Length: 358
Image 1 (cartoon, rainbow, N blue to C red):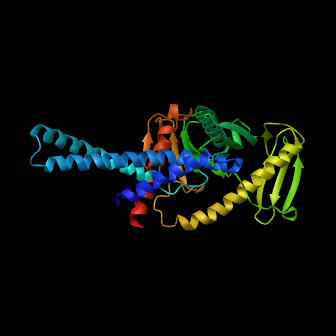
Image 2 (cartoon, helix red, strand yellow):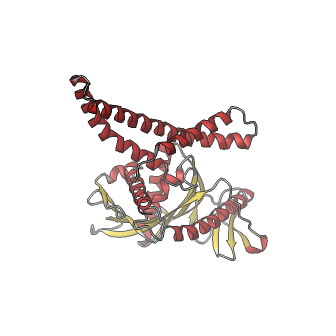
Image 3 (spheres, rainbow, N blue to C red):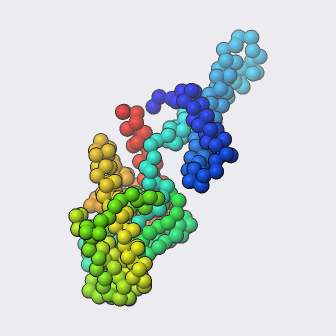
């Protein structure tokens, strides 16, 4: 990738300084909030740009000293050593700079909806869905995210047929979006008397929660039903008479909420509907934009088998990047950062390569 010019680097520094200066005089609350966000983002970029300029300057000084025939030999030797160190360090710093300038998904910094559903495998699939849900709950706790349960349907032998929750915090979607897809488990179920290994699956969907959802939902486009949350379809966490189901007729999208208050359930269900309509629009745009991408680590294709959890061998494998970790016991307890870091790094590398070829 071509190196960033010094004028481009100084433009970034100037932009940061302009935002910083504006923060000192802004009085409108909305502008102050936006400036604070811009400042936090631009500060990292400006600091990195200054570092690149400084290292390039040091490299130029070292090379000038080496070429100076009148310079003291000891200083020249020191300059040769310094030049070697700088040439080794500078490409890494410049790559970090390039990564910072990659186009960001506008939803990455926000919260996310997580949906975990049992797939093929009957009762074992529901148990596995429950394991995944607890894994993500523990991970959310380590990140300091707030978990807000929207609805849950328990399996007959334990676990969950379906769990929908909102994970609230900074950068949730950007970190969790790589979890969308089919998760497969291979293990001996507790109900298996002969010790045979069974394979079952659960699907995970991660949806962004935008700060502002400018989507109009017309009354004539929806049907609202209320029902007992302990009725047909499984045991829900809250056994009330006030569960709400909203069906969006044009798209056939169905959302539910099963808290204790019917008023609160209507509000939550409507929020969920707008989020799903937003995601539908987002997917339509993304499908066109990502057509040229080869790996599509973060494509969020819910039909794609992305990961296998093999309990007899104690390993978890992500098939998109061919990474296997032999620490399944820790992984299922929520220690998933190593996998997510690898997925994010692969996604960044892919986007850098795409930028180079564009």
